[in-house]
Length: 123
Image (tube, rainbow, N blue to C red; front, side, top):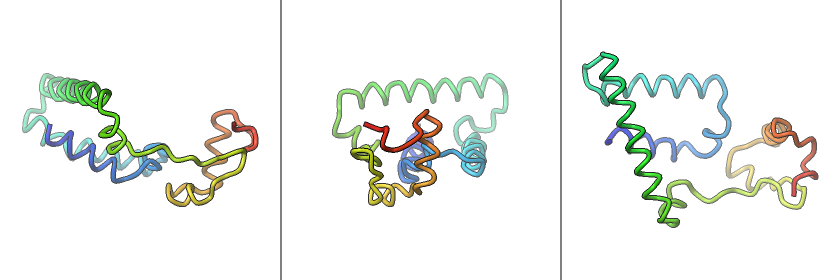
């Protein structure tokens, strides 16, 4: 559970951009993190059973954390942070994009992936 909590804090500090934009470098970092913390989670046990127990422990802890935060909106906002408005009235909010470290090109690419051709189409 200590490793789980540390990873939650680390991912939170990395920012929303790191969660929303996963490129090949981000994927490599996530895979390396999982490898680095593996022994801390299941010790020297490299068996399938040890891996399953470690995975089950993560799922169970995450389930209870999500249930706990569901009824505590202020704490949930502190952990997840407030959503950032990147497009308002069809116009890109450059200040918000700057705070979230999202370039205009990245935002437009994300819109296209969601089937939106132009920011003015966003409500």
